[in-house]
Image (cartoon, rainbow, N blue to C red; front, side, top):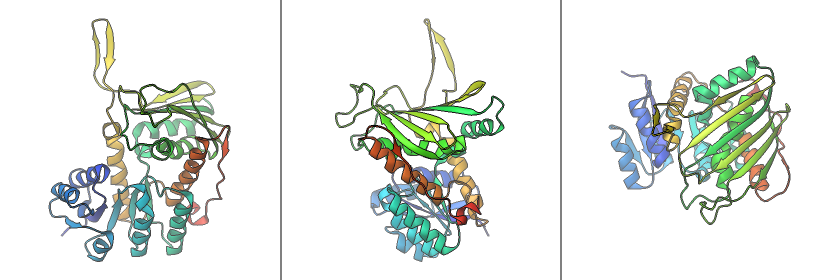
Length: 340
């Protein structure tokens, strides 16, 4: 007899397969009961990671099978709304990889559907909130040992990106994370977004104009700059420096073996997100499983996902606009405020 949460993983691409393996080998109290993936080869490869799981070509069949207690959505963002509405109708808890959906209107429809159901079931996969260094920095901001937070400097760098990565993805696939974690760290709300273009990196793909500098203003006076740089070649970096009244704090610096040799110092950096945030993903999914088993969520809500969608829409406009683009957000519905 087992009390494991039976999870259906929807989508068996890079992220979905990673989650299948994670739940099968690392997460306590859960098992992969189903893999939902229309592509037969990818479905079969994911099922190899979770012996005993059932394979389904579509979500409707999986939900009707009776073998699913909860759902993890790891498909591309354009498919999220349809999947989320089906899972909400089934009354099941769901962890949805970022973004909640690809635009504010569809995100708001998901929020309305969740509120209509009367239960908070959606947790959005902004895993940086589960990174230990981000957690520690947030505690420093709240405790104020160096005074009030004044500014945040963030750096989000990729060695390279595939040809399928287009200009708007600088915002929707990359800075999307900062739109969630920055307000969470700083205790504020984004009120405007501006994009500045420095000299173009000659190593960038021809169809991209980057790097970019994204400037955010928060309602508590904190200013934020985010360097978004996807052709840096040397590795993958996500770093933040917080400037306080009487000091600074930094997170995201490379860790591990340090080497001094032939007059040079070196330390290995990360190659991609799977190493930089491996533990954060593990902690996020474990927290979701634990919360789902008692009928709650343990991370960003659907309304948090909606706020990020609004910020991303402003960020995309800012890519082609001079000056700040305002971010206009509604008051948090009582449905979410009452649940923290």
